[in-house]
Image (cartoon, rainbow, N blue to C red; front, side, top):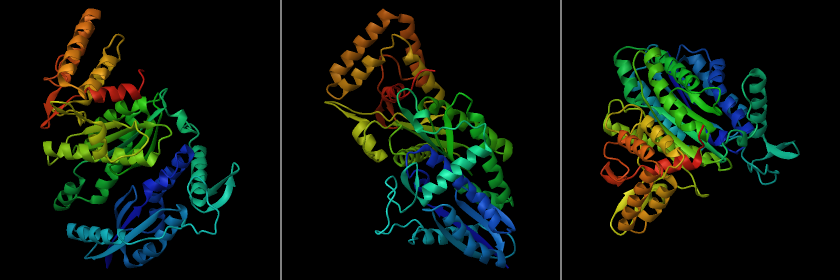
Length: 463
């Protein structure tokens, strides 16, 4: 008799981003990556279907299933204080799980996830707390009290750099930020996996082989997308999921490279092309990471929804971004309402011009966005006056139009060839855009890309 075993690890992002200290984040990331190896050491599986990013599915015999259910959660929670785990088991016929078996397992895991679990670092009032995490303190580190999870993270961080002496060590976030004290958090996720798995079952293909190839494709795409000049650190990298922290200057180029390489590597390693969507949250180096991660994840979801409207079967690769400028975290919808919506005496204008696509026709492309941004970086660019134009849009439509006319007249007088270059870039970006027309109909709303361009220019530096 065989059993389909499933485990879902909760609290991974909270565990990784409990503080803004890079040593803690890197150490936590290494602990999370070790979950895969920990599961392999805990069982003798007939077939592992999925084992990445805290998501485990495997076919076990009865003896191994009992062993894993009893021992795996204990080992995991003791290795990573603060993380909890949900488990479920489905009895199957033979040694192969059907799609119905997997659906039943997912349903049971959902039920288990809704049940309260007590983490091992639960604080008791009589214990002294670590000031940075408000968890029960266990020792002093550099004259400061730290909790058990922080102790584990620092130990994992030290071991990682001992094993990888050639990897550049970033001891502090300030070493990753640019001259404007900006970093970026990127969340990328593959498209259409939920629809693809049932098709693989029907075709008689092994999910375990597919999962392994997908994991390799994602990791290879990450490595090929960065170069030695980039300050970047992967935090979650497995399956079709990626979360990284990087210098704000590198974020847009790296994400564009990753989307392209993900398509190439999946086609090479799996046999057919998969696509991915990504969200980029630009933030100050001292901004709470868990909020930036949450925003990046939401931006990824938003671009997925937009991409699915274009192609329901295989959403095209795309990205969205936002530069967090306020001190308070808001939901994406709140950001759109408060910061990205302009209402004047005549119009309602939206500044969320994205998503930006890798190759999709009739949609703004990432490459064209990058080229347009670089055009506006040039000396003599009217970008500062366009910032004033955005401000004027809030007040009066006619005054804003008159200001845009004056901006273009001055730009032509100062440098006619440069004005032509900017106009050409805008038209490549979208055929309806030009120096004279910066407001166009998109997705049923009146929108402008200038705010997005200003976001990137205000948070990054020219290389």
